Image (cartoon, rainbow, N blue to C red; front, side, top):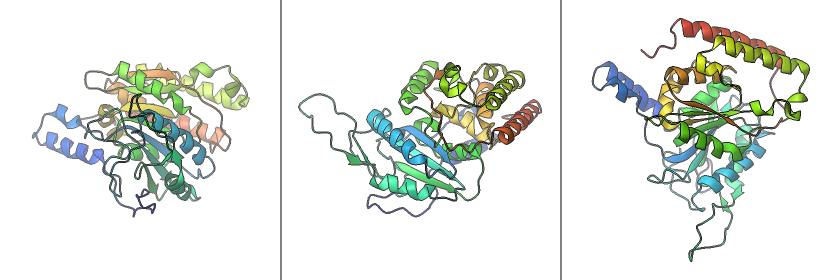
Length: 344
């Protein structure tokens, strides 16, 4: 669902999905109609950047996150305030044009069984919010920077009837992403969006010959700062125990990642078919699963320091969720060793 050019919400309908094409290619490879290496091709990007945001009852925190995200995305990847045509389900470009891979953006909000007004607030934001357009190059074509409404279709909402968990919401949203780069971020706005450019630069430097890379936003450099020190002793103790578990139970490269749980990770489009179709975890441990899948496919991973702030209103139950993460990590290790994640 999205906001149309006339300001009215579109009717709920299926979104474009690169995953459907992936499934068809895998079936063709199974039948011997195409080589296996061609079965991992992904449909062409329509915009430069896709932002996937899982949201569960986030009516109070999501407006601030959206404002910061939209301002940054439009300034960095917008089209000088121009608008392109898009269908009601966003199947064409939203704020972008094909043939211009450095421009265009979209935001996919995945409402994970929300029971509050998260969806209504996002729709209202998409309809009424004004953004300052991207600056035009110097020259005789200069014109005043007039604020413009968000391009119709640039913000799309996926509504899940039942709460699946953060991992399930992120995975679902990434299956529908149209970006050359796909990043997911938390709805609370804890991540500093101006650091998104660092993730892009890091991934571009790390890309392999297939264009695959994963840039992991990291808060490891913030250890010792007030943002971490002011947390409860129990939370910091459980955090250290979890990091020890990561080091002991995950694969070699993943174990070297200092901050696996930061909700700010970026993937190049060619990397998606090697990770998303093989996801099983829908809870908090999904980040680790993603990194292990990337490692198993020999996708380069780079850890990038990013800004972060503590935001009130967290739904994390320190004890309960820590136990769940520990159990999830153990099950992930068992399933990994049992070959559940085999690509054959």
